Amino acid sequence: MSITVNGAKCPQDHRCPAINVCPLDAISQDGHGLPQVDPDACISCMVCADYCPMGAFEELG
Figure (cartoon, rainbow, N blue to C red):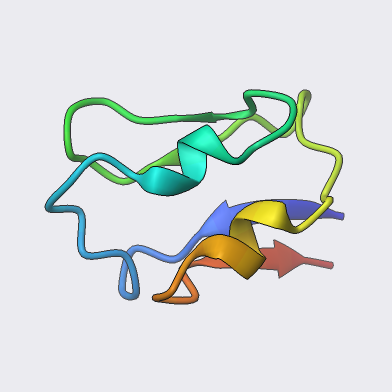
Protein backbone atom coordinates (compact mmCIF):
# COMPACT_ATOMS: atom_id res chain seq x y z
CA MET A 1 0.00 0.00 0.00
CA SER A 2 1.05 3.58 -0.44
CA ILE A 3 0.15 7.01 0.87
CA THR A 4 -0.99 9.94 -1.26
CA VAL A 5 -2.02 13.52 -0.53
CA ASN A 6 -5.56 14.53 -1.42
CA GLY A 7 -5.30 18.00 -2.98
CA ALA A 8 -8.95 18.74 -2.19
CA LYS A 9 -8.25 18.37 1.55
CA CYS A 10 -4.79 19.98 1.69
CA PRO A 11 -4.94 23.80 2.01
CA GLN A 12 -1.54 24.24 0.29
CA ASP A 13 -1.02 27.62 1.95
CA HIS A 14 1.84 26.78 4.32
CA ARG A 15 4.79 24.47 4.83
CA CYS A 16 3.35 21.02 5.52
CA PRO A 17 4.07 20.09 9.16
CA ALA A 18 3.76 16.38 8.37
CA ILE A 19 7.16 16.63 6.68
CA ASN A 20 8.70 16.89 10.16
CA VAL A 21 6.97 13.80 11.55
CA CYS A 22 7.76 11.34 8.76
CA PRO A 23 10.34 8.93 10.19
CA LEU A 24 11.83 8.22 6.76
CA ASP A 25 11.79 11.72 5.24
CA ALA A 26 9.49 10.41 2.50
CA ILE A 27 7.46 13.64 2.23
CA SER A 28 8.66 16.62 0.21
CA GLN A 29 7.09 19.90 -0.79
CA ASP A 30 7.92 22.58 -3.34
CA GLY A 31 7.15 25.92 -1.68
CA HIS A 32 3.59 25.78 -0.37
CA GLY A 33 2.44 23.38 -3.07
CA LEU A 34 0.89 19.98 -2.60
CA PRO A 35 3.18 17.73 -0.55
CA GLN A 36 4.47 14.65 -2.36
CA VAL A 37 5.06 11.24 -0.81
CA ASP A 38 7.94 9.20 -2.25
CA PRO A 39 6.45 5.72 -2.76
CA ASP A 40 9.91 4.15 -2.74
CA ALA A 41 10.74 5.59 0.69
CA CYS A 42 7.30 5.43 2.32
CA ILE A 43 6.52 2.37 4.45
CA SER A 44 2.85 3.36 5.01
CA CYS A 45 3.35 3.79 8.75
CA MET A 46 0.49 6.34 8.70
CA VAL A 47 2.25 8.79 11.05
CA CYS A 48 1.55 11.58 8.53
CA ALA A 49 -2.11 10.60 8.21
CA ASP A 50 -2.54 10.54 11.98
CA TYR A 51 -0.80 13.91 12.30
CA CYS A 52 -2.60 15.85 9.55
CA PRO A 53 -5.65 17.68 10.96
CA MET A 54 -7.13 18.02 7.48
CA GLY A 55 -7.03 14.28 6.75
CA ALA A 56 -5.20 14.97 3.50
CA PHE A 57 -2.89 11.95 3.73
CA GLU A 58 -4.71 8.87 2.49
CA GLU A 59 -3.73 5.25 2.08
CA LEU A 60 -4.18 3.76 -1.36
CA GLY A 61 -4.90 0.09 -1.35
